[in-house]
Image (cartoon, rainbow, N blue to C red):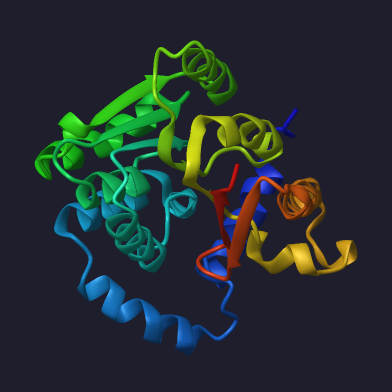
Length: 250
């Protein structure tokens, strides 16, 4: 079970996000150098969604992708050209809208999140961008939804996905991976966000705020799981809060 989010955790999270944006770069000037052109190229509906999320959620708006990571995802998807994708963890939908804008008109994006209220914050911007027809939102806990999809794939009732993006509760990453590997086609890609966890995965436990230590351990264990999985080739990128790309081999 994931530890409850306490007021102390909120206080620490707010202080951390105020001190440093959602990036592994410790050099703020370099971070700003990278972000400025990304912000200038940001799609108008993505910008509007980002600003609406910041207004409603404050520091917790950083649960959405950073702008430059979103632009990497957009370009990567245009190269990969998937027709059917799955997104585990939506929040207000910055990555979802990024994906929907990047993919062809006839693509399908299945998006799973238990929080429909947060999804609906971003929905007007999805509609304004003209991409709502690509999205099938499922309000559910992800394990239950993935288990049903997995049954459908095994029964031949649905085809596997070309691409899966996971940005949900970190304690369940292992459970999501166990299902995602079977839900993505051979040659398809799974992307996991936040896998470097503010760089804390490379630090001693004593250097990590106590309330974040369980999450640090979850991510370290998950990264070890990916490294040991012979069904995949993978690349871990120091982008945003850490992004791991996995390609299914068998």
